Image (cartoon, rainbow, N blue to C red):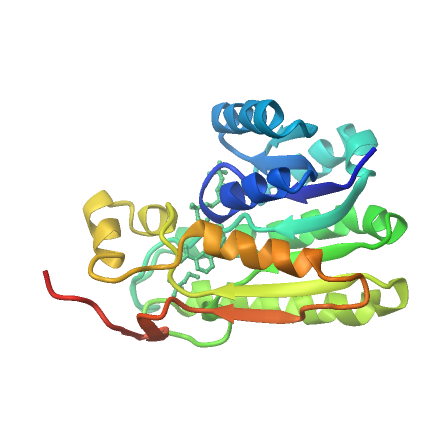
Length: 253
Ligand code: NDP
Ligand code: 8X3
């Protein structure tokens, strides 16, 4: 039967890179996201190149009934999962709190906090059964340090860190590993989604070597690949050019 992992937000960036690396390492996968065409293309690529089983589930993690429907209708598949990688997430806007859009706050909180909680709660009974179970939450350095214009995004990632710790405490009796991966700047679609402007998004990564999605996928896979008695509780990973959430060294053009 082999080992099964579920990765949320596998259509791009860190989630996509993690799906690739997990498939290379012979993990069967359940991949989720909202863009069905991309999910299907990735599924076909992984099945054809790595001889693993891949299922794709297209739904919005911030929609509670969509989560319950997707997980309920596919329970025969979900019940095989022993590793959950909660990666789906996003930032919207970089405005100060006094002028930010309430809609942006709703989307970030609903996706990064409530979505992660829905998927976790619906998957946990299977993780407890399928030892050794492991939950990996993709947090952020924004879950440790706050920066101007990032107050609400940061608060969602602080919440992810608190949820990770809460899970570890509650699941201790069930021998489940729980890990928080906290990256700094990773070059993905993240800034385009946040700023809704391709040129401005490019500037975020200009003049520095940001982390690649594969750098984070490797950290995730390495954490999973430790012996079952070893739990990597947290990893904070910055690019060398980034000293803090507010200090980045950029080469001049
Ligand atoms: P991308 O925008 O490249 O990828 C985000 C993924 O999340 C996509 O697959 C997207 O799929 C999915 N997603 C977003 N919203 C939803 C939703 N409501 N329902 C289902 N899936 C959703 O960004 P990254 O790869 O950079 O981001 C992945 C995670 O890493 C996020 O949690 C982010 O906060 C975190 N992170 C990113 C950093 C960075 O600098 N890039 C640094 C630190 C943390 P689709 O659009 O198809 O739904
Ligand atoms: C994404 C990294 O510094 O843009 O979580 O918030 S940052």
